[in-house]
Amino acid sequence: MIIGLTGGMGSGKSSALRIFKEIGCRTISADTIAHSILKKDTKVIKAIIKTFGEGIIGKSGTINRKKLGRIVFEDDYKRKKLESIIHPAIIAALKREVAKSKSRKNSLIVEAPLLFEKKLAYLFDGTVVVYVTEKTAIRRLMGRDKLSLKEAGKRLKMQLPLSEKKKIADYVINNNTTIRNLKRQVRSLYKVLKKHIAVQVN
Image (cartoon, rainbow, N blue to C red; front, top):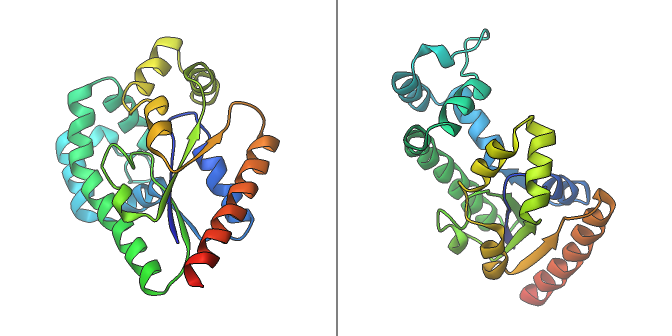
């Protein structure tokens, strides 16, 4: 069974993915794929440097993601330009991983922040959204990324609201409280998914 896991900035989807991994699930993250692409995909790297200039290159000689992030989060046009360069490569890599798991009949949890925005739900047997209120997401973004209230709110508006994702996902994990509660919900959902897999096999 291939499950797509999504959420929004500050929702805790990466924490949920980590818990799935801890309890024995095979997992992959679109963000990890993006990291790899920015280090190894020469074509994408050249296109990004050509578009945004050599000022985004860090001391290590690779693209400095924080510098690039500051540029694109302040300018919608530049953000969309970056997305047009890197998203096709990320989506292609995700599709390869999903196809590989399906051919081997392995289960996989895929974290994809833009799962619904990029209309990727068809790739998965089920979708999970990690939900928090906007107030909680903003508070976490301000603490985690040292953003102002205005900056945090602006970043949240770049993605489909969690209230909308919640309506279309197959399963919802509510992460408004503690990490302990998040772990409990992930484990409970894992039991549900295992039963579903068993039914499909039988």
